[in-house]
Image 1: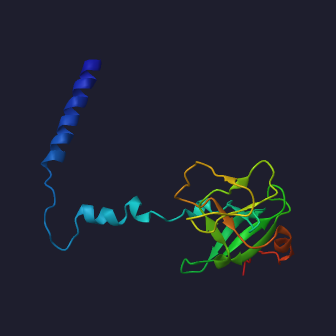
Image 2 (image 1 turned 135 degrees about the vertical axis):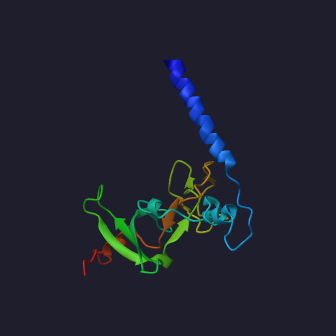
Image 3 (image 1 turned 45 degrees about the vertical axis):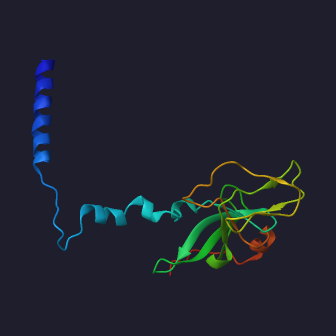
Length: 177
C-alpha cells in the first residue's frame, strides 16, 4: 500500500516538473519589463535605511541630560503621509495616569547608538549623541555597548525638555471632529 502511494507521488512530481520545464522564458525586449526589473524596484534592499513605524511606538525618550522623560505613544501625520507630530506619554504607571503631549516632529531627534552610561554612579551624566558619527560626554569615560544597532528602528529619541516641563504642557486629546 505504501509503495502504491510513493509511486503515485513520484509520477505526479514528474508530470508537474515536465510542465514547468516546458515553459519558455520571456526573452522579448518589448514594452513590458522583465521579471528581474520589476522585482528589483520592490526588493527589501531598496528600503534599506528606512525605519519601521510599528517600532516607533514605545520608543524611550530622553532629554539632553540623559534623563528618561517618557516614551512615544503615537506619531501624527498629514494626509500626504508626512509626519507632523509626536505624541509623548509622560509619567504614569503602565499607561495609567499618563500625561500625553504632542510635540513637533522636527524637535525630536532620533539616535541609533545606545545611551552611554558613566561608571557605577550616574552623577556625571553622559549626553546621548544626536548624530550617528560621534558621542558627546560630560563626565567620566563611558562604557559603550558592543551590540550592533538595529537598522529598522532607532535606539531612542531625544527631546529638549524636562519631565516637569512636559507635564506642564497642555494635554493632547484625540479629537473625534
